[in-house]
Length: 179
Image (cartoon, rainbow, N blue to C red; front, side):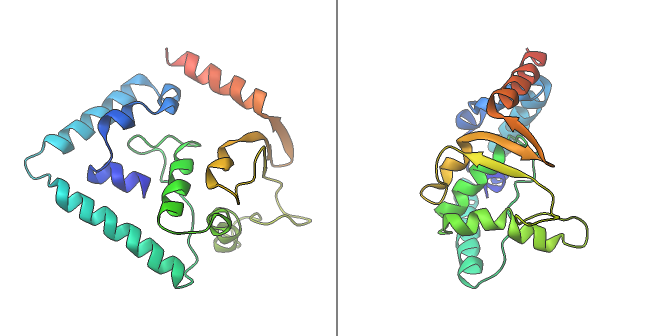
């Protein structure tokens, strides 16, 4: 949903350009995204009302699918316009909650459901003996508020623990490389 709002032109360009995670992207990429968004918004064929209707309908469709028991798969299609890998997923989870999905089901859409969908290709999605050890340790309960998923103490990637300070150090190096 978050990406569609950008691509359809309903996301505010100033808000998009203020995303803090853009510092992890090459400046020429951010400029390319900005130019593409400006071109969309100034195109004579762009109809803001139609764009808003499309997004409202997509939100209703997501809610109807969810209410109908369809297994939803979490994803953000990053990298796309203003959709930075590792960060855009948080906005996507927020939009899923805005559509009416419960936090538990949003988390399940990014873990169990994806593991089930890819079961023939990989071994993840649940915490079980023999499964790949990819975990996030949080400082707050995401079942209380899906935004708590961003409050990470660290992550376990294929059984290797990465504390938040190490992750932030790596991110700082990436940001420095783009200054």
